[in-house]
Length: 550
Image (cartoon, rainbow, N blue to C red):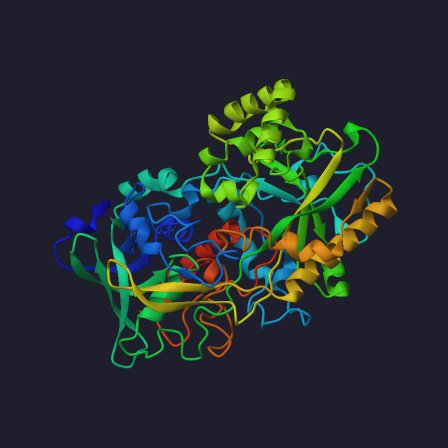
């Protein structure tokens, strides 16, 4: 059933109330569509984008060169940010859950064995095909090599990333939720406060407001916050009826240890052999899903080198520099005003181009009309119009020289945080200030990993990687924090002194309050977070089904 909070008369009640209808919230409620429990799914937005609603995400950032404004990379509507994600799926690695003395923070209180049973279901919900994340498992008949002859001591080239359609969870699962007798989706329902009982150990009710001025209360025996890594700490910190510092924040842990990923491009990879000896594009598995190989730093190498997790791919030259002389890349540069902020920033960065640079891009398009037209037709047919979209821009460099596109783990850092400020939104809630910080350990991971890959390529004799170690920090921070990956602000830990939720995602000290989403991740790993968000959400649903507290 779907209702609109602007037409709700009186208060609401349920067995379970899930706040937030993005990947995590929808994944939770899908497990209850045919159950006996009455579930409320509260969504702050409507079914479509609304400027006034999206503006509620506004806030401050400490350094706009390092982090995008909080209103970007998020969508306050049914389906959440799955309406704008790229669809990249991969699980966390076993080492991500291990206790690593060389990495800051207490790490995960659970192991890979606690999450692995839920990954296949997450893969299905994300529509990423089979849970097969090695070339051997996904392509029994063989897969094209990244670099022919590569055999790395430090790096493997066998692991894959798989791609969702990308699936908009709101559109994909709307009908199932609307037809359920056990789940009620409430749109335009902004939860502005959690109110606890006399002893502060139980959420008695949730305060709900709409932008039209309607206000009501929701009572539920169990409450799940699935609002994303920035809104979860905002609501916890704003709920101070019996918790002076905010719910779950007795030890000043809410909003701390905010992570994204360190990502960018660096260096030059000169490939030996002819064009048939390297392949940096996608292959379609038997289940119809686009898959792509990448270089992944082995767990043993991470431990030996004392660095975080790291993956990298062969990549086209940087688009803003017309010296690449590639018409397709220049066409993308000229089309920058037509591309959404989230993707134009990743493709082009934010720096303004000179007139000479713009002229260079126009010249590239005019001098390379055949390849440019071929690329644009491919983009139209296999991405713009396709149901399962070709995942990213793939352009083979004319001179065989690639850059490295890397995605690296960020260390937990208590000084990197999300906090409240005095400014308030249209509903009266305090806005947030994002102070995202990186460490020299983050930069060291990129530098040391690149050095190790250069050694592997040289020893294999298949390619030569060159880069200036002095430029690594600038390359890693060229576009700032990797947008959309809001991690660690309500992290999972054994004790309340170390984190916000326990191993079952229950807020320490609050008997009926849980958190779903990447806010609970104690580490960021190398992987995009969505698949693990969904896996942990399915795991949380199983916990709620077995919970005998009530």
